[in-house]
Image (cartoon, rainbow, N blue to C red; front, side, top):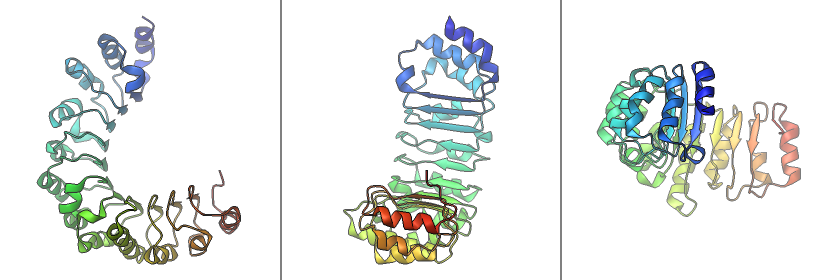
Amino acid sequence: MEVKEIARRVGSNVKTLTATRHPLWMIREDVFKLIFVHCKNLRKIILDDFSIPSSIISDVTIAFKNLTVAVLTNCNLTDDTLMALLPMKQIEVLNLSYNFCLKGTFLVKLEKIREIDLSHCHKIDVQMFKDFCVNSQLQSLNISKNKNIIKNCLDTIAKNLTNLESLAISDFFQADENSYLVLADLPNMKRLDLYTYLEHSEEINLLGKFLLAVSAHNRLEHLDISESNITDDVKAALANLKNLKILKMVDVSHLNDRTLTRLSCFNTLQELYVSRSNISASGLIRVIKHSPLINEA
């Protein structure tokens, strides 16, 4: 009764709903349904690690009718369920990471999409993704740990997603060098998240070459090369990137004080992440002193 009363009183005013499996998995289905029945003005939904029972999908759909942002990670979704749940034509931001059964039928429905996360969605159909790229005005894309897309679609991304400002990518050993290098010329790319495996020397070298090619344009404002490796190409790239505001180099091999002296972004740098590295306290203090905008917190 308490849940029902709370949902009845405040439900119509709720614009964002966040839930994970751990507090919800023991809630009775009728109570779960009740929450959504009263939350009819949602604009943003964040659900993680649980499946919505098929018996209440129609009720959930009513609550989701005004959504523009949907984060549905590790929810065991299929294409049919996803398209039944969401008003696909009006969704602008969609995070579907760790939904291993998705094939990509839904992609063609996303008419207003600006940001999409398909990381760890291993079964996305290559041709469906290519068709999606052709007509998309996408600004942010995460395809890390999505080997089929990385192996077959990088040229399509480079050719069609010219509005892309943010890209997250991994598995550099899945595609040839030229396929990656074409991405370096994306004209609006400001954020780059690169994920690699330290044990693959070929991948480490390709990551360095790619980053060096990207740095030649000096457009990046946000760079994450965590769990990577400092090579000569990476050092040269860091020297080229003068406009970085956020730099993440967590658990990076061969990162030391000398590497930080190669940075050329001190005037713009606001956030620096270098935990689990060989950076000394004095080296870090030196960076802070030379970076007037840095967030010491």
